[in-house]
Each structure stands twice: as structure tokens, then as C-alpha cells.
Image (cartoon, rainbow, N blue to C red; front, side, top):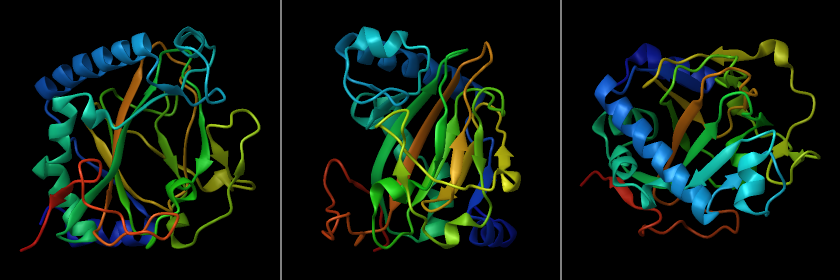
Length: 250
């Protein structure tokens, strides 16, 4: 058992759990170098998104924007090092305690807030985008840099996972949704050391502020589901290369 009963009870009540440090210093250094190289190649090939802008545009425009919330989905298909993290027992043991012994990948993503220009991600529930059923997916959000409120650490509303809320279009960028009337006085900043992680429920309200510091904030998120999860069309998610079965009880 990776998580104590106290940690499980906290997650059930609050919808998130601070965990770690998860990675060792040598692992962090290697993953930082790999992360930066994958983003360099993505900018060269215009195969990334800047969530601070409307979808589309060329790589130079996206990379030179005054606000940069850079995203690469399916990092595991571009990097063996990050693909190995999907199967890391330190992660899967905790996920198993949260959702059970049969674990599938929904998807993964790298989320980079460069120094000084890193853009915000508005308040949302992940399942506001995904609309998966049942809504019991769990994410592991880990950072390769020390993350605090100034450079874009995760902020959450405890207990908000207990019901879905309506999402509106974001007027600033069509790449993001937003939620009206969030009581930010209830927000908790989940500051993490480099190599730390946070688990959160797919309905936990969360937000990351702009990066106004001289430090980067490089994060990697893995989203897990159980077999039988249905997509927004009501179709079962199939086990395949894009959604591999990461652990199974036989």
C-alpha cells in the first residue's frame, strides 16, 4: 500500500493529495534535459500548442507570444524517458490505492510555463473538457522545478470534486474553458519541490497562475482511468497504443 488510510481519507474528502518528493535529483536532471529537447523539437516542427492563444498559428508566433502556456499532449509518444514514467511503480502504487488495480492511461501532457512569460490556466475541472463517464479519473501532476504561487504552482478548491460544474468559453483564448463565480478565498496553493507530485480527482477545481519569476515551471501530468470508462460520445475507451493498460489484476 503506497498511501496511508489518512491520505486516502484526505483525498476522498478534499479531491487532491500532495505527494512526494517522487523523483530523485539525478532523475530530475535527466528529465529536464529531455523535456527541453522535446519542446525544442516541437517548436521546430510546430507540433505544440500555446494555450494562451487561440488554436492555430505558426510556431514563431506561438513561441514568441507575451503569454506562453505551452502544451504537448502524448509526451510518451515522443520520449521513452517520459513513457517509462507511465509505468513507474511509485506512481502506479499510489494510483492503485485511489482507483483500484486495473489502470489505463487516458492521456499525458507536458505543460510548460517559461520564465516571465508563462500564462495562466483558468479555473476548471478536467472532466469539463473530457466529459468521461464515470467521472472517477485521477491525475498525477508532477513538476521538474520548485513550484510556488509565483511561478505557477497548482491551486485547488478542496472538496470541489463532489459535483460537476458548468464550463464557459474563455474569451481570451478558445483553447481553454473557464468557470464563473469561483470562490477563490477557498483556494489552496499546492507548492511542490522539484520532483514532487500532486494527485487530483478529475472534478477537482484547479488553476495555475502566470509565471512572473525568472524560473521556469516545467510540469508533466499523467491522467489515469479504469477499464470501462466511456468517452463524451458514450463509447467505451479501448485498450490500445494511445490508451494502454498500465496495470491489471489477474
